[in-house]
Image 1 (cartoon, rainbow, N blue to C red):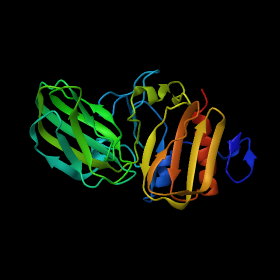
Image 2 (tube, rainbow, N blue to C red):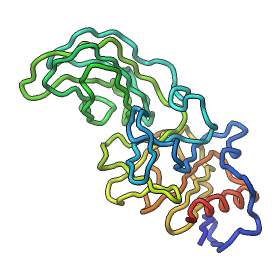
Image 3 (cartoon, rainbow, N blue to C red):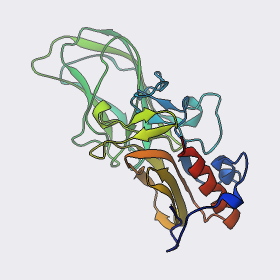
Amino acid sequence: MVSLGFGVGVTSVAAQRVRGFSPRTLFSSGEQGAFFDFKAGQMFQDLAAQIPVVRAGDRVALALSQSHGPLSDPVQDSLGPELSTRTYGTLAAGASVALAEPARTGAIYRLTYRISASDYTGDLFLRPAGGPFAYQVLDKTPGLHSYFVAAKDTQTGYMNLGGANPAGSITFDDISLRAVYAGHAVQSGGSAQQPIWQDPPSHLVFDQVDDALTTVLPDLGSNATEFWADETGVTLQPGQTIAAGLRVLPAPAQLFAYGVINRPLTAPEVAAVTDWLQKLSRP
């Protein structure tokens, strides 16, 4: 069954199929939104975008929106200007590192930092109290580290050095915080909350308990359209009011594709999107 969100259902649009269609064409006039079809090469197992999802059973921490085409570097090319780039030197237990002031509610940021020396026995973590980012333990070993984090408010973000009776210190060479503009979807709550990729056909499996992916969107207005395919069929929902901020993707048992755009779809576009979604969800 195909649900078109107009109070009616249709069982087939086979006669209106469009060969070679991609939802990327919906965004060709600068439309805002995002879409995901969860193909290999578009997802990563880590928030640093260093470990790609390549085999069935891999967890998905980061999915790249395909709405603006393949980028030469899909992570780097979707970043905004630097918000925090400073050299901090050596810090010991109890120290805090201010990251940005302020963060934008509903935005996703890439936090990158380089550690040149560390013998710290406690934890390096994002401080949730009085800050915009959820608690997350960060890598404290020497080297370059990167994470995608979502902002829940507009307070200054902090990294803290803490733990039970910790000893030692961490030497930071630089710390960078940059907003992500391309509508990528993340799960920063750890592997237990990350969906699993399966193929064929390419799709995400959610435990329907706490698995989730969250994207960040600009203000899409009061006439946006959402569309997705899951194990029950195809859904298109026109006339949606979507404000700027975080938006959680649908999390059914199986999600084959998801998209959202800041305008209504024409009748031919509805037919093409429906057919595209149906094809993705077939083995």
